[in-house]
Image 1 (cartoon, helix red, strand yellow):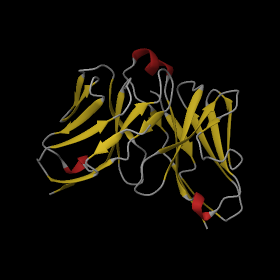
Image 2 (cartoon, helix red, strand yellow; image 1 turned 60 degrees about the vertical axis):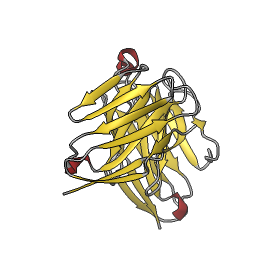
Image 3 (tube, rainbow over the protein chains, first blue to last red; image 1 turned 30 degrees about the vertical axis):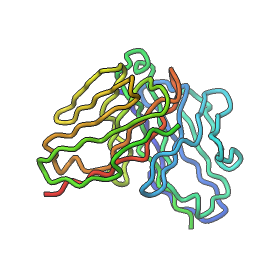
Image 4 (cartoon, each protein chain N blue to C red; image 1 turned 180 degrees about the horizontal axis):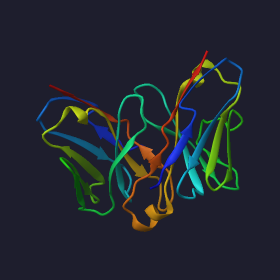
Length: 120
Length: 111
């Protein structure tokens, strides 16, 4: 249980275009999802917290107008990279925690499979 | 605040043991351990919730010293499949808050 599906797995786009990344919780409702970015050989850095039905909370230094997050339903959160530039090339990954995990306290956060974004 | 991991990298021969440490400057609610293979998403290994708790999965185990605000991951009789980057994650607060990860420890197991 507690599967998060992320699409696309890889995307190449031209500078100036926008790219949308989707994360779906398949077997549970995720009121909250977390978006991370990982540059090569670095750690996963939290970008924002996505809340169903309300505005996302962005980490310091993350441009909210550039990285648009929408959490319109309990099973879907999207991250749109707008006006992408080569420096936005990175591995983007979402994460969520099933409600049962909060109750049982013995289940970790589930991650999507990640999206490798390359901006050319 | 990001937890601190050590060492940054370690190379082992098959069958050798390794210890990866994770510490925090603030109180820890729990410690989560993940392993990430190159180009893949992190895979959950285990979570430690209570001070003094120890857990194990096959030949990988971990301990959590709440007072010292640190956790250690033990890999015994390492296998080639253990290669990857290990991350510890700590919660920013209680409840459904995000994980904040250390910089990772790159483990390479060679034949």
